Image (cartoon, rainbow, N blue to C red; front, side):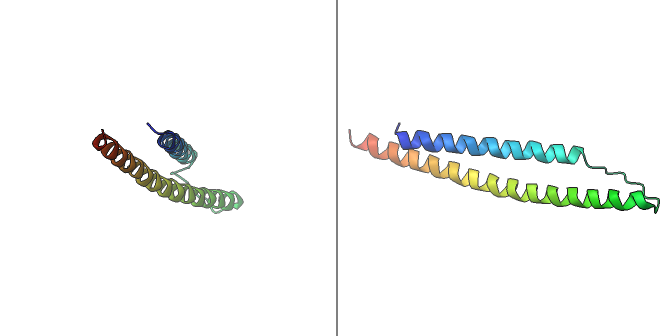
Length: 95
């Protein structure tokens, strides 16, 4: 196994761990969300609405980054697999 393949597998593994960390962070943010907000038209309502809006924007941003990185990791892993298969195909034919 070549050293570049090992380095690519390590980088892919680190990226998978980053995707898992983003998934866990997204779940943590969702757990701090309040799905049942009861508003009573007082001064406290505006702070609740603004905090929920901020949390919603943060959830959307994390979700976009997570999904984009997940697609990139899948494409990267498929490219690593294709290169490994190509190298194995070429080295087995030369013996």
